[in-house]
Image 1 (cartoon, protein in one colour):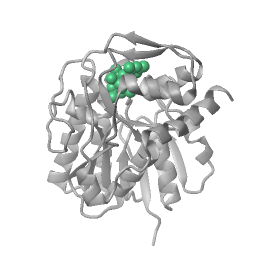
Image 2 (cartoon, rainbow, N blue to C red):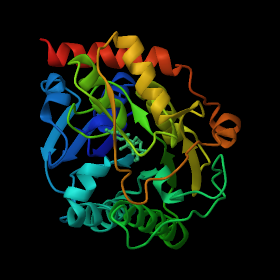
Image 3 (cartoon, protein in one colour):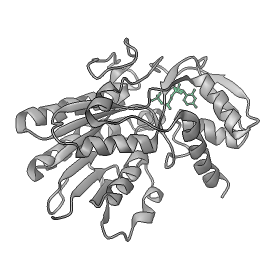
Amino acid sequence: MAKQRVLITGGAGFLGSHLCEKFLDKGYEVIVMDNLLTSTIDNVSHLFGHDNFTFIKYNVVNYIYVEGKIDLILHFACPASPIDYIKHPIHTMKVDSLGTLNSLGLAKIKKSRYVFASTSEIYGSARIHPQKESYWGNVNPVGPRSVYDEAKRFSEAMSMAYHRKYNIDVRIARIFNTYGPNMRPDDGRVVSSFIVNALQNKPIEVFGDGSQSRSFCFVDDLIEGIFRLSVHDNLNGEIFNLGNPEEIKIIDLAKLIIEITGSKSEIIYKELPEDDPPARKPDIDKAKKIIDWQPKIGLKEGLKKTIDYFKKMIEP
Ligand code: UDP
């Protein structure tokens, strides 16, 4: 049987780069398109020279074409950390509208299965807790985070439109906070920022009073979830929360990272960004039942692995 071919947009990013490794390990031919706006070639440079790996530096906002068959498209291109998408608001909106349109168009021509990287942000400042896939969300359509949240919501709507109109085998992954190796040390996300500052004994900046919560999933667990969602049959038009339901307040995360690193950092408090969701936790019952997936790596264990990664990066 001919090799399965997967196109990963954003394949040099944090999640994309782990997906490249996963699919190569599983014997797929992997083609990456990435314009390296918020990602880095360093995440995939070790794969150059691999027979089944092709990297194309390309902005998927423009018309996409790839020769030959494509069995699976994973649309993961998009700035994903709040400081990145607020810095690149128009590109963020383009990559999750025009980029989604182009990649869905390619899926239609190539009869590919299509997995869209959505986000827990589509739930906004959720009024139900934990969040189930059936919840419609509570998003400010004009706030600073709207460039990301509304683009992701639009992409979900467009994916479902292609599914309904053209019978594309679409699957939507609503990805909750994820952390681990290949995050950029300066991406501004909470886990990377706290670890990088703790390792250098610099102040740890907690936004607001730190009582807001998140639920953090280690990247290996998340990637296994995306893989299962991608290869499982009969999931056309299905939506899955993927994340770790282990919830923690941001202040407690700061204390935990100080404890694990043995840091001398002090905690300082900064203003809470506008529309920062007060709580977030996935209900993953659907993923458990249908794709037999749940995270295996607890927060402490995952943080230790991530700390080791950043240590090597900061103190080579
Ligand atoms: N946060 C913080 N200090 C930081 C970065 C983030 O206190 O240096 C808080 C932020 O206000 C939010 C949470 O940590 O409540 C998670 O932020 P992140 O940017 O990682 O992702 P989000 O879940 O908000 O998309």
